[in-house]
Length: 177
Image (cartoon, rainbow, N blue to C red; front, side, top):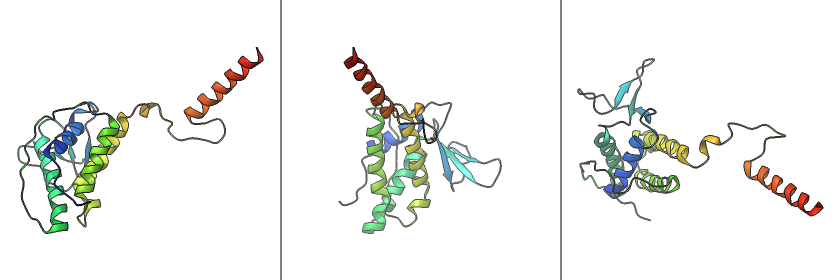
């Protein structure tokens, strides 16, 4: 399959998901080498414990994040085909904002596939954004917050195994009656 520049709606959905899904009290963030702009509106913050910086997905950063994603996709095309077109991103609220988590994962997978052809993909800000967004989306999956946090041998069993055991026990009890 050939690489292409994703439709702007794809980027709108990714940006919207990063900023507006998952609650404003728990903003998504990831490491960046970008500098904070003079107005402080690009979401770049310094850490309090090192010289490292991170970007926060928050209202007002939509166009900065979207431009970063668009630039990553364009750089991927440049690496493959020698294109060096410049594009300007303008955020617009996506037509649909109620995508299911599994659909969002598909949209994210599409973007990553189109943007990963640069040699430094796995150290790029776009890659770190995608990793952070994947964690955010995984947290939206049904049952994600009730999932086990580690397991031990013995009594711990997957929920579907416990349910099957209980169903077998109920059927056996019915047969004995």
